Image (cartoon, rainbow, N blue to C red):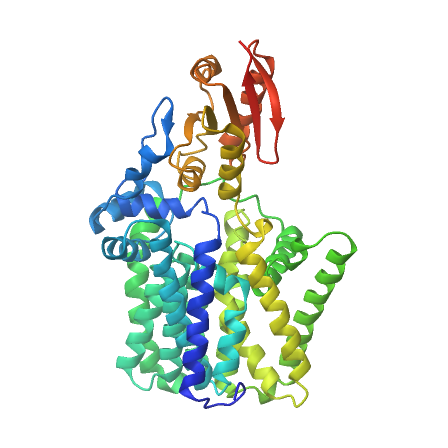
Length: 498
């Protein structure tokens, strides 16, 4: 049934139910990520929150995460403080008004979008005459799809709209359907600019494959351009934001990074879960399996689905990595990240399912693929090496400081990416003091003097936090009334001796 072209509906429903369970578990178990708080604060109407200048308890700041903004305010804030289009943030604000303002509740919107995207992927696979159940399971097993489907960012909605537009473009038989496909593809870019690469590839495929039906392509292009115009309204205002976000472009390192994150988008960080020689063995196994699957697709190319369908899938798959390279070359940066390459994962999954469907000896290969994917997803949900550190850091700091101490954390570049995740993961009773990069450390020591113990959280995730933490540690190490008591993995404790 897994490789049937018309599997029972109950099997497809079971796959979607499994997806909902896995995505929800991921949303529950993973630590807060730094950029999820940009979503939260935009939707709350406080894109750059005002933190207290002195000591405060984490529980007293819950209110700044729980506000509600308006579509107009979100649009204005995005144009002045961010680098993204607004569609997802409008959806998130509406969802939070209905479901609640907690991070888990906000993440659940992405879970819903991801489950819907998986259902659309099944329809796309069937339209390309590839077994939909196998394609859905292979896509769900990819690290990039499941990871981006469980965080409070716009990737899952963009994925849904991209797949929907591609499906409509494949099925379109008249201008009205073409216009709808173009609108869906344009809406994907109005959620995440980087979907423009795959969307443009799909439109190019339509023109090349069915050039006689030019009216459908023209209607799709009009629908797409309407939303691109809306993109420009935001992009032109944001183009000079976060100029140092990515390292400068260099071709060979970019190609190596592309290969590394491309493999990770499909099979996650499996080598990170083990050490020593085992890591090399696991890395070789993952790379070998991916090479084998790619080889099967190339070998059985003419037998995978329909001719038009497989070329649409291949062009959509290749568009994102090629587009990221071109973008990096044009702007002299390296915008290559796992979550961006996740936009290629569904198309890779469908092609892999199509290639495997042509083999009579696919059983052991399918078993090995699903086993590696299951291990990858388990690590994604449980292994700290795959997560950003706020939860682990907050827990260690709370353990070290106890009820009578103070935790010091850096302000970071903008007061969002560093302190907000730490506060989110902290218990209400934990007392905190935010330290700015150029702040007089004598004032910090004076505030800490009211407590028996001070703990410096080792958070160095941006330029300002990296510049703040070493001088702060040095100030306590050289202060007359403080001595280093305990050095943890993510925090350092100092005891007051005077």
